[in-house]
Length: 442
Ligand SMILES: Cc1cc2nc3c(=O)[nH]c(=O)nc-3n(C[C@H](O)[C@H](O)[C@H](O)COP(=O)(O)OP(=O)(O)OC[C@H]3O[C@@H](n4cnc5c(N)ncnc54)[C@H](O)[C@@H]3O)c2cc1C
Image 1 (cartoon, rainbow, N blue to C red):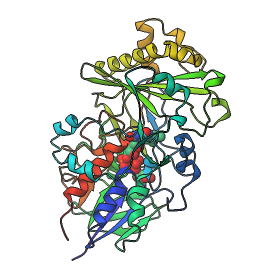
Image 2 (cartoon, rainbow, N blue to C red):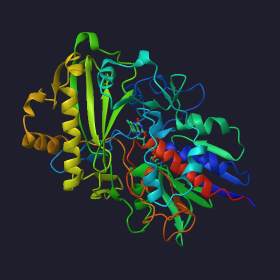
Image 3 (cartoon, protein in one colour):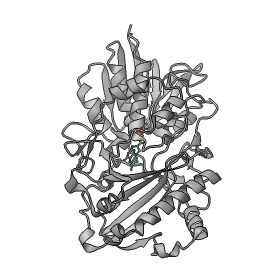
């Protein structure tokens, strides 16, 4: 007997899911994505290069109309998500961190070790020659360390390269790019296929939605799926960014590696992360600038949400800093960054440090109340949206949507709460768990 599966979205999770499902010859798998293809010999220069800023500028690789509110009083701006085959793995900063095992154990994910052992994304340290002056300054602190990046021999490895390219010749796997899914077809609470934006219908016995933590709930809501909790509980790591005007000798090539090191610190049970950037993109006006991001990796607020407008477009509000814990945590991360930025190592490479785009400098942050006020008005995200179709609420342990048959979600939206690390590798592990749970022969 043969069964058909449609996988919606070819990002960090979707590429894994399509690979693992199509490993069973009795399954016909169609992977559809709304954005551009990513084929051997056809990787855009920006995606193949070292700078994720260039990757984000490749045509069609972002959702330019996707706006999100970060926190109360801060105007909504574009929220970066990868688009097209490879998804966010084709545009991300390649930071490769697994997240705490204790967190996964706490969720009862006893198969994590097996899932990690199946992860096919390579990770390696950057060459010393690629480190910028901002990395070098951070690494003067004992707590800082070079980061592994999802690269091999100095080149980005996207989820498409790791999981799709090796199996493109499987006769039971079809990959379709430029095919946006409008909604899922549901008949008597059973998924029966999808409808594309052009009105065409693809039938299938099973549908797995892997469109990411913003677009997966949007597609479910547009399809009339009424499982309680869809779109609620949206999280990201709250952050602030300092912009560094670097001394001439500390300038970094704008096509070089922007991020190669980090500093992690604990305050009680909270994890703080400092992420230095040796450059912030290729634009003429950002030449000679670097940055330091300070983030809280253990936020607890669940007030964020993804909904849809009357016309079915995403309505996204992260509601960051909605509780006192997250506010205090981000203030701690900010203080940690301020200490580092005021150290001799940074003094030697930085001319001036800005705290906004109007030219206000770090000297304005004189005391506790000015830091708190600045954090509240300048809090941003970390492009790590999660938990809008949380396991235990929206989907069960097998990733099946509660109250429906043959309908699944597998991507960063499924995390019960946000992992305490950058989310690409944890999402890959999560998708390997989907593969393990759907291994049965057909
Ligand atoms: C700029 C940036 C930098 C980042 N840096 C890092 C980093 O350095 N390290 C790290 O660990 N994490 C990083 N992240 C986060 C990480 O990449 C994501 O959390 C992870 O890739 C999410 O995987 P996903 O499968 O949930 O979604 P995605 O990888 O985003 O995949 C979703 C896919 O669904 C497709 N899709 C959406 N809507 C539809 C539709 N209607 N029809 C068909 N297809 C659709 C999209 O085109 C996309 O391909 C970064 C993210 C961004 C955007």
